[in-house]
Length: 358
Image 1: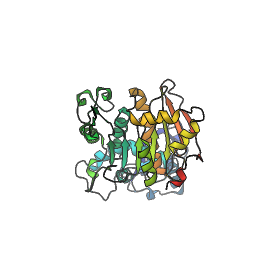
Image 2: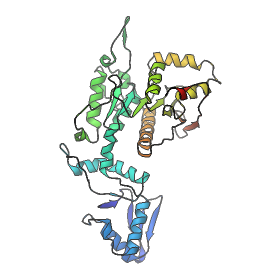
Image 3: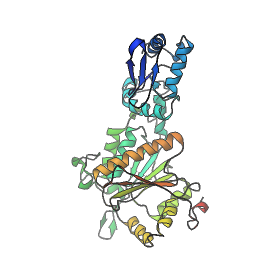
Image 4: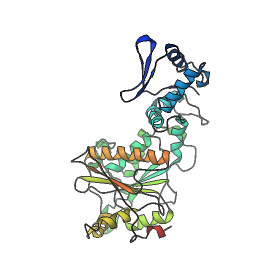
């Protein structure tokens, strides 16, 4: 398979024909000038395959570069037809994602088809706040094009509750991340569709069938991300259905708490965490009840950017590794102390009973 050096990796010629391959953090020195020249030829665009290494020493160096994650696939190899954008355009757009994949899985197949496969991982974002829209845009840009936003806002008029799909974007959301001022007053459904259209990485890869998961029509997502506190009946339903869900707290004392990522019946749930926290605050259950009935306070745009970026990287970890640093754990992001996120671990609580839900 044709390959190239990762974009952040430098090829630096040293005295006596030696070469340094790497970046500011790590690298590999090829002392033998002939081996360095052979490796350079194999990394040229015209070179068809790594297997063309003529010497065992060159093959050893190439293998070491693969192990370090310095090498990525250069071309697309796909079974899917491209209709709206060219292979090369998609490759350029997906290049940062391929680089990150190579760093995580050195030696693996970090091609564009693995990016495309993310479209088969449906995600639902529960909420319609700044954080929800930032997540929607970033997940689409990262290749999770089956990501939808479920708006649970209850815009009350007298005693009647307007259907969530009929609620409109407020000026609080117009931060440019990614909602703009000209979207204020539009329906959430329309604004979300615009964000998806402008952000999705691989739009031509939707091959029929329902494009977005929907909690209301029974379509099951692979992951639910809560950007506001959910009512107990919602979380109970997800626990019963075995739906993986990532909790994100409301803004409290300048902090947003991400986690836990709940795999029902397997990992501690959000209630396990709250029961443990209630030992220090016995009124926590009442606070949670009020939070489930009201819209969360909007957070600063900069904090939304920090948290949404961390969450999307965490989603990538969960998708690629089938594991997560937020399983049985939480991270507090403090707007007043942004350089020091606080990570905590939690256990099942015997008073919760979540192990008996499934």
